[in-house]
Image 1 (tube, one colour):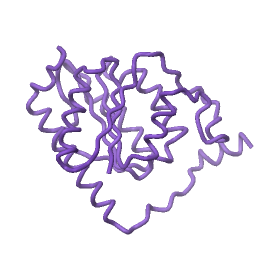
Image 2: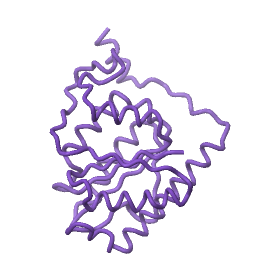
Image 3: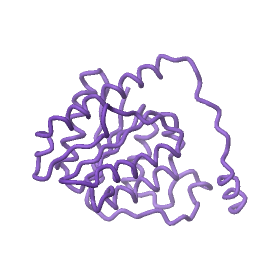
Length: 208
């Protein structure tokens, strides 16, 4: 089993990476592979609502980062998205790629466990955490929780690892996700039947 972990920070080895790595180490202890993808620092095109994905099945801006995440979304068994807090929200670049990924490739993630992690230097983590969870809760994804909100505190590089309670929360989150992944894999039950939303029907009528 494999977890796709998206690092939404512009810093390759910053505090968000350290938080995700702490979870990744716990996943590996649980016998689960963890793959951390850094979104990079290049400009990321946001969704323009062209609806090309509904016709072609993929995003019109089929850039390397999108193609990479789309491929990994198909093969993963669960998803973790991490972001530093910018103005009480996730990074703009992260939201730009997630808008496109969930619009054009959300079907590959449906019914897979998901969790978000926010890293802040002072405050705003709960707002960023809430924003990221919205991607999962409108895509039929079971949201995994811990015994507190999935956030950790750190300002200077690596400082997040000194947040003992935050690291404890992330370890519990990883173990809870591993437990749910095993339960799903061991079950013979098929995914629930999906009914096409009225909004999707209207969009399909519009582009037909």
